[in-house]
Length: 336
Image 1 (tube, rainbow, N blue to C red):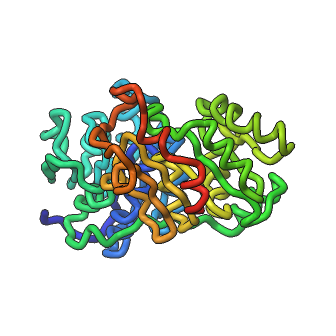
Image 2 (image 1 turned 120 degrees about the horizontal axis):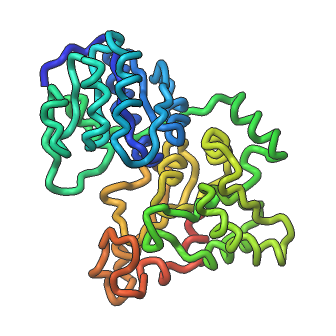
């Protein structure tokens, strides 16, 4: 790939929090070689990029899930025309490549996908296997040594302290659980296990997630609070993503499924236990020395072996979800 390594670059961000975190090493590489970075991101992902010091500007895209939304993309393209030398299109969809094309950005880099050959000037072939996602995104830089990079996020001390003070919390004075996984139940450790774990911990537990996960978090919190009033606090759908980032960054530890917030905790270097079920830590691991991954697939003492894993299914095709149901509270507790 032959492109200049300076100038103004537009990054078209992915739409999921975990994927956004895993693009950070790419952005760090681009910034280090002199590119000024502006990220275009959907509002629910944009705060992740504001936690990356190498990003000069973040544009909140007013797009919704689904649909081409051509008029909205064309309007933004007209507004930014002439401002950028290069665009990196991180998602594989046609619509994500449309805006840089309409803005006539001279160099447009991305993976082949969804019949968008004419929209990109520099095209990488999609790998046939499932590579680690950090390396997948970092390859768009055209550089080598991609496996050594780990995502890093940085919150300002002022933002963290403001969030903690507003909620009456102290740094390191609580644990965070992220019990959701939007992909499906085959990625979610049972709610009753999260409840049992919370009851055994000495500090309060904050439950984080989207509004869709509020009922799940209520289910976790109710039995704990019945015995220990106020021990579990359900913040699902009640915090902004910025506040959630601050709460994770200042936590004693984090326990989560394979989810976007798992990658957030890893990028902050928070002690964490990451629980894997139908997905694989070989593809989307939490990249942190302080992360402990629990996956029964690779546990030689677990019998009979999980030959079905990873299935990458939303629900267990065999109906037993052994990969999660057989991962005990005691096992998670001993790794915290």
